[in-house]
Image 1 (tube, rainbow, N blue to C red):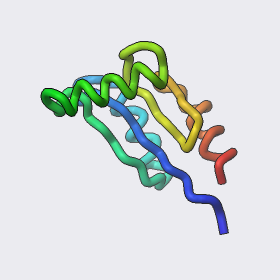
Image 2 (tube, one colour):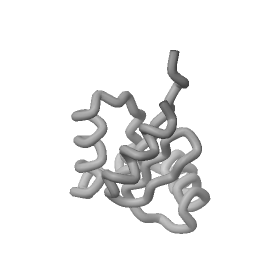
Image 3 (cartoon, rainbow, N blue to C red):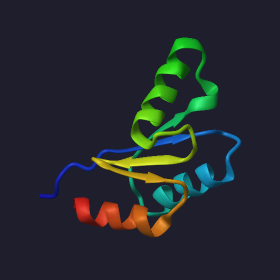
Image 4 (cartoon, rainbow, N blue to C red):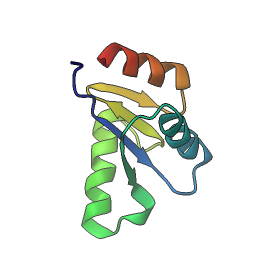
Length: 87
């Protein structure tokens, strides 16, 4: 029995790299929670932007969090490596 892998993607709906991260996870059959930050409003958006800033030190997208591993941008090798290491 493997460990539970929690994957969260902070993205913008207009960002091509964000779409690539989601596509990669979909192709690999990985369940993930996608947070489309530009669709949030008010306090909820501010809270999520604060989370992204806390994780990366800036407000850039996409940000993929795999358990405790944070991958900034579309770095497929880093994402796949983190998934492999968490299994």
